[in-house]
Image 1 (cartoon, rainbow, N blue to C red):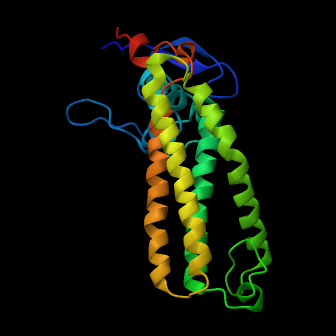
Image 2: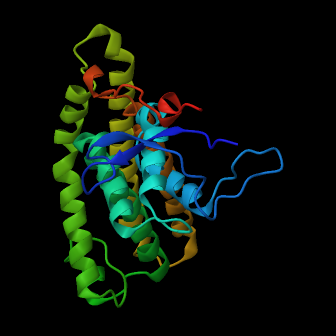
Image 3: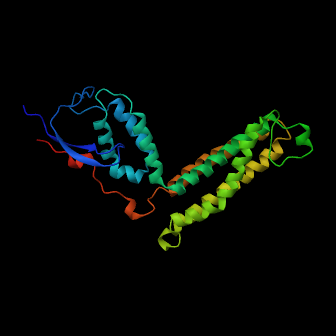
Length: 264
């Protein structure tokens, strides 16, 4: 019986997304790719892990290019491989961050710093600050007993970065969403609301952390845990708001592997 013929995408350059060419092949499925009783190929460990890496890309991009990228990754890896190479993993992660855009990256940094501040305040309130420096209020940043200087320096630097990012990030999101267009006003309003919520959460962290550090105990620390959860929820909301492409030209044409695959 004649083997089926397939057109397979093969990478032209180093990275898995640098360029493609369709190659006519008639080889049987590579070793390690088993078939289910119904005759359909099972998902290999390599394919499953590559699909996890593809989550670095936004959903709108995966809908159009996931099949193409996955096919290229599976074709360029040797048979029997269980894990994607470090170069492929790095290319996918960096490519996903690049597609999401710099506004998304700054937004996630803003959220991570805020969530980290809630965790820092939790430690301050549970450990307490009863040294002479704290009781005499000669510091402007919450500390805890025995805190290493490097952690205090990193915390102060992160707090300064958060404050410096706040206003530019609001304006960048307005430009990213094209808030001057009436059809984008709902998303722009949601973005402004998320920004205000982030500022309110940071104020809550500062107040609870500063006051709670003077009274060691878990009671104040319990307030930081809901704030930390709120920061994580806010990150999901911001990710949702920025889930659409910045420009319509950024949406790639669907050239999935299934469209170029033919039989016989």
